[in-house]
Length: 151
Image 1 (cartoon, one colour):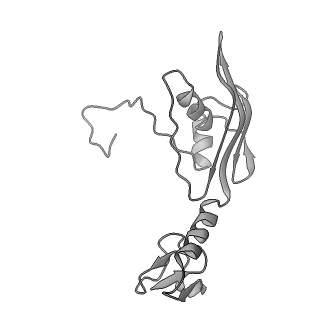
Image 2 (image 1 turned 90 degrees about the vertical axis):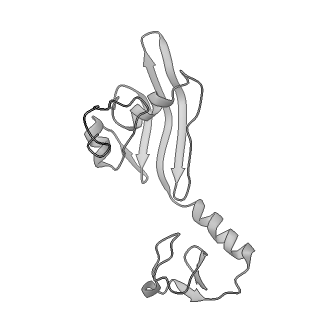
Image 3 (image 1 turned 30 degrees about the vertical axis):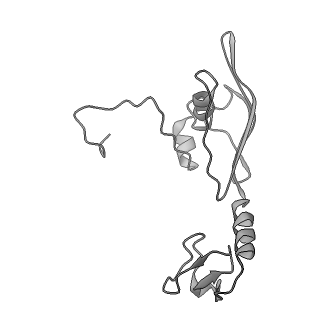
């Protein structure tokens, strides 16, 4: 058994890289220690899960004529986290994702988007994609005659 010194993950000795964090044996990031306690391992994973902030949306507001769709919404995503955005119809889930994805360009909403700690102001979808943001919307526009891969 190998224990990753980077994140505390235990894995088979035959592996050359930690499946949890990608640290390699060549980096000197692993030790042979089958006796690492579960508490140590859990603490290391908890610390890794609270990793660097990858994405932050601060005080996002979006108003349409007569409707305030988003009112000071904040959201952050850190390395190792998985989030689900849930809510009733009309709660603003799609609107928030359209702000993030550049569908609503900077200047048409209030608040701030940070990626990797750097403020980003997307002029459109291509700008967001260039920063690594990809949104798959629930309202799919599929072409019946194309395959899954082509769509």
